[in-house]
Structure formats: C-alpha cells, structure tokens
Image 1 (tube, rainbow, N blue to C red):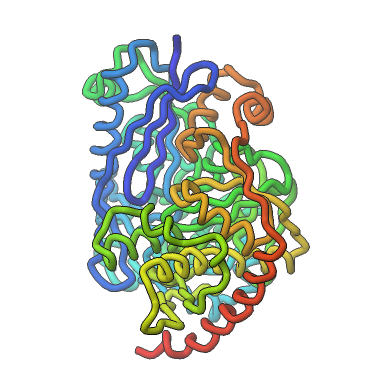
Image 2: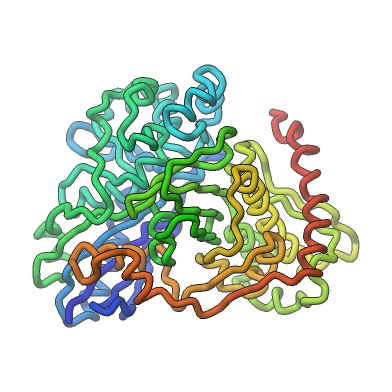
Length: 490
C-alpha cells in the first residue's frame, strides 16, 4: 500500500494528514509552535520553528506507517514575509498575515499610488496583511536588514526550500503578495519596483502540483523515511482548503472558520471588486477566485474562553444557549481583535462589546461573539452581492465549523445553506489530493471531488430566525461607523 502526505502550515500549528491510494485518511498529526507579539499589531514567528514542527510530525508518521510514502505537499498561511540573505539564511522572524505594522505603507500605496492603479495592476488594493507592504516597511524601518535581502519567501515556500533546495512559489500564494499581476499571472515589475527590491529576489512561480524534487537525504533520514520521497508544490491555505472541500467548479463557495474567517468563491474568469474590499486571487486548480478575509474569527471565541473565562471548555457555555433565544439578545460584538481586513480595511479597529447590562451572562457574551463573527462575514457577503455574485450555499470548514450552534447562526445570518464535508481535514487533506493527482492516482480535481468529497451535514436557514437576524444585523451595521473615528485616535 502507498501513502501520501498533506501538510498545512497554519498560524498556531502544522497539521499533517496521511491518506492511502483511495483517498481515505489513515493518520493525522499536529505540532504547535509559538507566535510572538512584540508590539501592538505585530505578529511574528520563527521559520525554524516551522521546520522543527514539520520534522516532529513526519517522525510520528514514519513511525506509524509501514507502507511506502510516495509524496508530500505543503500549503501555508498566506502573505507572510520570510526574508533571506545571499546565503539563504533567514534575516528576521517572519512577519505574519495578521500583522498590521505596515499601516502607513498601505496608506501611501492606496493614496499616493492610488487604489485604481493598484487594482488595475494587481486586482487588489493594499492591505497591511499583504507581503509587499511588509517589504516596504522593512525598507523604511530596518534598512540594514533590508539591504541584505536576496530572496523573499512565503511561509510554505521556506519549508519547500529546506526540503528540496528549490526556490519557488505557486500562483495562489503569489496572488496574495500585492506583487503579482493576477490577471496576467506574472510578477508585476512596477509593483516590485515600489518595493525597492530587484525582481530576482522574488521566486519562480510554478503550478500547484508541480514536482519540486526529492526530499534531501539528511532530512529524510532524520525523519525516518526509508525510500526517496517526492515533494510537490502546494498552495495557499485557503486554496488548499477549497480543494479539500471540493470547491473546484465555477461559483462554488467555501467558508473557513479558523483563526481567521474567509469566504472563497471559485471563478472561471478574472473578476475584481472595483472598491478593493474583496480580493482577486488565484486557486490551486489553475483558476481564478475571489476571497474575503476577516482577521479574527474562531480566535475570538478562543480569546473569550481562555483569556476572559480562564477555561478550555468551549462546549458547556454554548449548551446554555437555547435555540429559541437566538436573535433576541441585545449584546453585540465587533470581532476586530487584530484590526480588520475585508471589507473595511482598518488595522486600527478593535474588538468591542456593546449593550452590556447587569444581567448579562457568560452565554450572552459567547452568543454575541458567534453572532459578531457571522455579521462580519455578512459584511463581505453584501460586497459579493454588489458584484452580482449571489451565493445560495457554501461548504464550511475550520475549527469553528465543529460547533452546530455556530453553523446555525451563520446559516441564518447569511441566509444560505451550509454543507459540512465528511471527516473534513481542511487544507492538509487538500494537499493529499494534490499529491494523489500529481502521482496519477486521479486524473482531475473533479474526479477526486466526485469520488472522495461527501457531504454529511447540511444546515438550512429558518425563515423566522433569518428575519430576526436581519433586524439585528441592521443595528450591528451602525456600530463600526460610529466608532471608526474613535479607533483612529492616537
């Protein structure tokens, strides 16, 4: 029996999933690593921690799997900046996707260069999460380190380099840098010139599923592999999640309720939002897509439970929330714990509880957090509607999707059906499917979807609850505009 590994380089941990030739999951492993927040709005990790965690996970797999492991692919958190010098040594801790330090650089790009120019050149406006503004931040704030940059990697591409020595990225990840002409699918010389780097600093772009080489012998031996292992190009995490959930056809949608919250819509043609609130990106299946991303989603509930309630029990409080009480609470929550991306693009926005009273209980706070995340997703859904994209149903994945209550709230706030895939392993399983396709076990992503992706649970909106949430959403919409100027006060 042959086996195939998919790895998801996430924000808090790397997840490894092993499947067999039938696409059935045999084993999974998780290895965590720390995140550093040296200043307000800063978010960093050590790339060497990623590699160490990957090796630990691979050792668990090789000690458990007796058959031959044929190949491996890695997806990763988008937008992160990993700068390397001429010796391919990491210059500083990676600046992550949820880091907002490049706010001033984004203001310059959006105003001085102009949003219309940026959209024409890249399909997107500048967001602090994107890679190019981070590079410009380094130029402005760490000039000595910036001068030593010879290669710019995205997180997963650093791991691929460590495993194979190959310097490259893929189209889905490159699209999130603000340095790619998404429509033409090539690096934008004019955007790279703005970064102050030479185009040679940006890696070659190859398709997801491309063969990168065999795992280096020393790493293979250290991790317990007995035969050479092929390494294939992965994808951005949201593109990988879409593959893992079977979002491979035009207009199909996937909502990911993880650390961040994303709405991913596949498209056969290049489309863009003239206001830049929705990102125009590329998929891992040689296609275009639209992506909306909120920076704090399931992480909001994690924060409330662990930091405020001082508990690790995410379930018991939810059980106290009765179905008949949904939509009736007067407590609201703005989920901007790390600032916000889609659709408001405000790195200074912060989380807010509104409507608290002496009788507010724990369950009211939990319910408001779940609703607040759903309302923030609704904000982006309204942008999709203005673009003429009417989403009637979506797949849903991520840690938050394990909560039936949260799925019910989101379904009714958005007024769409939500489909949960059987044994969804998200992005890491998407990478398993990429390896299976690259190895010739399946011929197309559609064939994989038809044979492997099975929906086991569907959450359907209820008319009365949809109406309740419509009224509450209209009140929610008043909060951020009322507080926007307060957030901007230094």
